[in-house]
Length: 258
Image 1 (tube, rainbow, N blue to C red):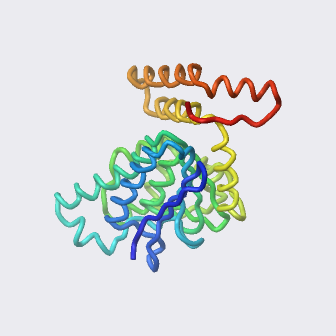
Image 2: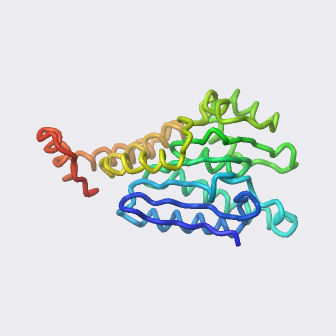
Image 3: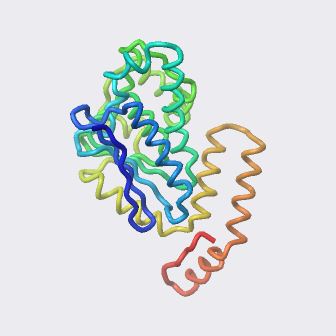
């Protein structure tokens, strides 16, 4: 049964995408549940980092569940509803107040690649494989998805990946800037990294993510003002006092997000 699971351990939430037998392909229900889960985590003040992964080690996400296309994407209304669900999930990742880390093992194709690109950090196992197969399926690809690809990879790399619909391995993905690093045990690495990040000041993480998204989004006065306000909130917080005290006392800081 296709499902989206999540657990919370301390300040780290882990979302697991599961579609057994279909290499974790995303059904429409999974897209909608992922959007709901991200809304839930957005409101969960204790969550400071989110890890996104596929179930098992054979696939992150193999793409959208093509077996549903006849029923779900065969008419304009169905295509629109499906695209809204995908956009909501991907934008839910990029606009989440805290960093989202993709832990990628095995297949990462199509919609899976879109999800990975929406994340802030991406790490992969050496068996990871990446592909944007839209050209082989005859489906259109939304502007939001192309823009995010260009933001992360640049126009030349994005065009090559999209137009050729070719498969690239983990080493090639690392070389093109799609990945931060490749690790033999990607899940263990990402959990350690998530725990390290979760020890940092939540308001600083949120302000940084807002700033990165504003830079990627282009010049936006409203976005710049929001970043300024988020930075001011950092300096006005008790966490700023705690951070300076911990530094002076040579101890680990105890941040509260206030």
